[in-house]
Image (cartoon, one colour):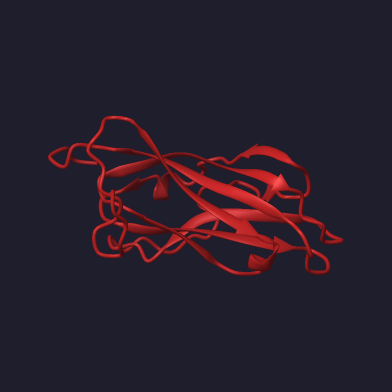
Length: 142
């Protein structure tokens, strides 16, 4: 598999595929690129697994979405999370794929996550964000 801005993730198996990205407290208030998905796919799930709880004095959370859509979709930093996913406790939190307008991608798009803290910046925290995708045969219309 290879990932780049021109082609997206190259996949040749009929399965649900997962893009993952490790984030840490130092990514607070940043838009982090998780990589590119290829065209002819649908996002079917998302979530975060927090390994070390973030220790900011407010709510620490992450949104998952996309930008740089080659097909021209408007960037949506929380397309795959109805509400930001909690980073304040160790464990798993599933996201919701809520925007049907941004569910199918006929061309590549860059997947992003955006961790934020409501209070002071955290000094510790580590998590793994993921997005699940299903690719379709290139000859099929989406």
